[in-house]
Image 1 (cartoon, rainbow, N blue to C red):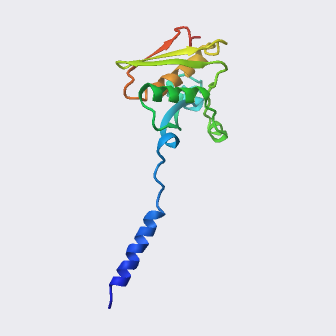
Image 2: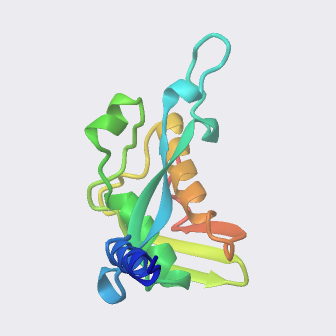
Image 3: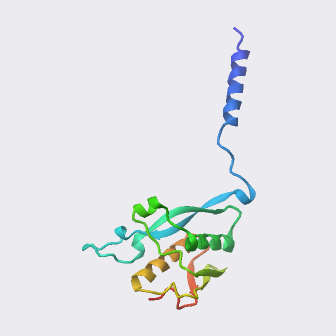
Length: 166
């Protein structure tokens, strides 16, 4: 029996399968990387009596994408800008996830990372980052959790200091 033909067929079949396999990730401007954006689910943040606590216990991480070629301050900026501009899907809202972001007029003006200290400077000409203690605590917790996912970030400072205050 001639075994060359069956082995040749198997080799050809394997090559065809490999060609039909997963497409390699694109390179350049089209490549993306996953980041976590933090949102709030009040159902996960209730005390024994069913009162919402307005704490980081209600934070929920959702995966979003930013360009893969970003790193350092650029990656942090893109991630936080995504949080500031992102809209939840109908399915995410149906799951009880919420956010007051995006806030009209709020912009991330500057991102500076020095020795583990991340300083974020915002513009808020319409005072959208102020409000009740519960709302502001959740907004700030979302920002902090999103920023602190990066290994290089040890501490977060928000400027001006009167932002995200009740």
